[in-house]
Structure formats: structure tokens, C-alpha cells
Length: 370
Image (cartoon, rainbow, N blue to C red; front, side, top):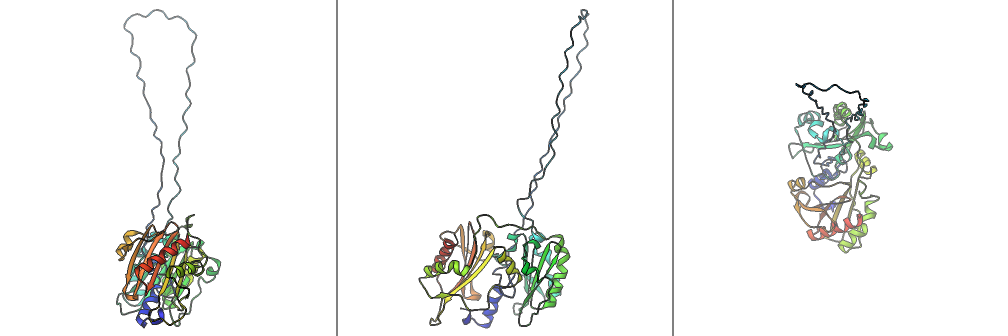
């Protein structure tokens, strides 16, 4: 339960749930989102070419003995050949979407540029991708203060403008009020949509202006979710029975907290049918160590095993999963389980639950999602 966390732990949790798309250690609420591990996409073009071959015929030898007088004969017409059609090379349609900035955060902003914008030394902060904008043809990046005692963070996401719903388009170019916490600013540049999450409106606006012209030249190509992707409607309703059954409890409800995904980027990801999120905990407070669950879903996405294991993931077996890992989260006093299946991937962060219980919950969630 968030209500039991110290102020430092609450800050870490808010950072996990802030609205970017790169490190997810998750996208979320107002601050440093996340959605990480960029997937580089290559545009493969096949070109078919034709090769023309010619042959030469040698002249007949000259006779050295007299030849009999020729007799007249009816000339036989020589056969004519029909020329073969010339094959024009063609290009195959790309099978992989082009990513904004090639999926490369260093091309979006350098660490020195981010440091100049924010006013303190900043460094790129990769994380484990959950709601990763690359799955939609974009890119999302996060930078944090090099000094871990400081709180500054900057999150940038670039997506194709075609993905942005009308309600979010209406907010493009509107300078936010950041009083009381981080906020986001978005702008359209050609066919690209740039959204910046920061703790200061001026920083967000200046960052978008610096990125914008280059984003217009590399907006990414919209990617449709695969046909087998999960159909997300309402995470709480879709998973409530599954979670309650897995834990053998009928007293679970949403966790009451401000640490929830929100913001312009979150609105785009959910409108596309790509992302959803929900939480569960006892609705009463009569337990000393009540269980808590936070579940993120990305339809049609898949984890990269090498990235998860580099992030500290230990492979485990989960019914219904193609691959799954457990990750310790000491800063949150929690256990994290990530898994993917044909329909997409899930990220389950649990407190006061055993690994076996978390694996049981994950299996039930995957079964409920189909």
C-alpha cells in the first residue's frame, strides 16, 4: 500500500508511474515516465534484377574444293524471335515500421543538451520497456539528475501525429501550469507529435522546440497492433475476478493513490488500444501488511529476453506465458514479475506477497486476457 511508504519511497513510486513511454519501470502519473529499451527497426528492401546474356555465332569455314553448281530452291523464311519482356526491379513493402529517430534516444537529445535545458548534470536513464512507444512507431526517452539525491527528470516521447486522438490534439501548443508538480507539454511538428514531461513548463516548451525540427524529419511510421493483440477494455473490470480468485480474497479494490498513469502520452497510448493499467488492494485497513498489486498491460508487445535479464530478471515458469521473469525491487520493497504471451505483455508489481502468489496472479491475469 502506498500509504505505508516513506516520502522517499513515494517519490520513487511516483517516478515509476510517470507519463513517458520509455522506462516503465513504468509510464505513469506526472513525472518521469519511462518506457525503456529501444527496439531498433530496419527497413528491408528487396530488389529483383534481371541479367541479359548474349551469344556470338562464328562464320562457317571457306571450302577449298570446287562445289557443284547450286540448284535453285524455294527460299525458306527465317524464323523470327520474340524478344523477352524486360523485368523492371521492384521494391518490397517494408515489413517493419520506421521508428521516430530510429528508436535512438541519443539522437533525440544528448545528455549535455538535457543538462543545459534542466540546469543540472543529467544522464540517460534506461529502464525495462513495458509501454514502449517503439511498438507504435515512436520513441520515448528519460533522463534523470546524475546526483541521485536530486529529483530532476525529463521525459520525451515522439510519435506519429496520425496516432494522436482529437482530444489530445486540442492540447498541442498549450503551455501547462506546473504548480504543485510535473506536467507535460506537446506540439506538432510536421507529421511528428512531441510530448515533454518536466517539472517546469519553460523547460518542457524549450525542449520541444529544440527537438521539433528534427522530429519533423523523422516522425516514425504508425504501426498497427497485430491481429492477435489483446483487446483492452477496462483493466479493473477485466482482471478483478482473476486476481481475487488467484489470491482467494473477495475484499480487493483499486489502490487509493495519486500514483497512476496519466497525461497526454498516456491518453494516446490508451486510445490506440495499446496500454492499460490497474491496481488491487484490500478495501479495509485492518491488516498490518496488506497485499498490493499494480498491473500494467501492453497489447501486442513482447519482451526482449536479453534486456530483461540485463535489468536483473530471473527466468521463471508462469502458466500461459511464453517467457517470464521475476525482478526484485528493493527501493519499493516489492517483487516485480514481467511476462509475455501471444496477446501482449504484463508487468505485475506486488507488495507483501510471495513469489508463488505473484506467479499465480500472473497466470490468472494471462488467462483472463486470453
